[in-house]
Amino acid sequence: MTEPLTGRAQASAARDFAAQLRWWRGVRGYSQGRLAQRMPHSEAMIAKVESGERWPTEDLARRCDEVLQTGGLLSGMYPAVRAEQQASDGRRRRRKEVGDASVDDARRLLSMVLADTNLSATHPFVRDALAALDGTDN
Image (cartoon, rainbow, N blue to C red; front, side):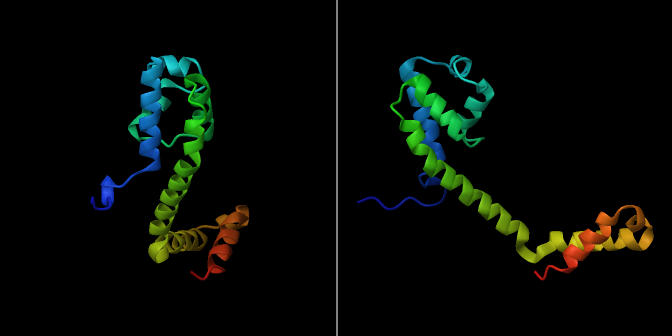
């Protein structure tokens, strides 16, 4: 019996998508450039999706299905890829919010602007932004 995968060895919807895209391109005899010519996406975009540098879009999945005649396989994989992307984006947001340093920094900067200059008279957004920040109790 094998043990569950952990860490980087864990299955990834985006990696599975990239592997399927590469496999179907190979089966159909398409280079990245030739595939890009058949759809409104660049060769660089296809290469980045296959290498894991970019998330695929739903449109890319659908068009790859059409051109490569996959029977909707890539489009069918897209919801799992999108869920993985959203989870990844959520993790980044939570890390940024730890300690609320960005709110404190913005409040401090706006206070300095109001104290050192008379920008609030010509740029009321500074006062409004400071009021909005003061109204947030994080």
